Image (cartoon, rainbow, N blue to C red; front, side):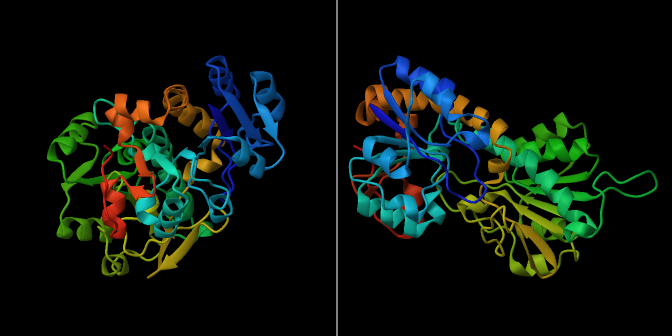
Length: 367
């Protein structure tokens, strides 16, 4: 199969979807790989490294799309890329279509087979290609929040770890999956007071045992969320419903009752966000203020630590990419029900229930 690796065009997105080692693996398996010039530069991979691995270097993005059958990316395609798709194309990337109605409509019109990293499941029901970026985003959420809590960042001027005689900052984490757990780990390590909220009592029990009472745990309810966020210096949104829009756990009224200069970091922004006041931002313009509360809602947080992110991501994606290229989509999804769950769009139809429900479109299961 002919595989295309375009350069990412999202704001401050420096990751690349395949490393030179990945190219070498694909070429050894008999596939052809075309990489857009300088696609790997942001992650520290030169065109020469890709060429030595066996890739062809395409001078333009248009050439990559013209040559390739399978387009592998990191982030969802932007309008400038959507126009380059043709009906035979297979797209393999993070999609988050439940929060992107226009992109969903455009890819359906193009009849692209769109396979999402974030809805592909392993045998145990976990999300193997979402996990590494969730781990990174969760870790980053605390350091980003700590930065914006500084007075020069626009925040309250609170040091998360406190000092002897002065109480530490209070971090509230909504959701205790991969993102939330990573955020809790860093926040505890920084010496913050941490409150974790989740629906699953067993998960909270596990975290309580793990941290030996160093964190507070609460079961999610409207009252519990309102009380926690009103006391917080930093609130991290880490809620995920795979393939679907994130539930709005924090209303604008709740935000209005938060401390002035408090900070919200909504990692759920890819799926629409779990705050009513969330709207996507970019690394170029990352924060805005609502009701005196700073909001950081960048949809590609790991993009600014690309060396770490690219290596972590491609460790997870390469086995699936190799399978899609070697077996073809039909056989690959027939043999792997977890990969089949990654197919969001096929033949102009929506094959992911969460995406269909988010946009009021018919849901057509894969046969």
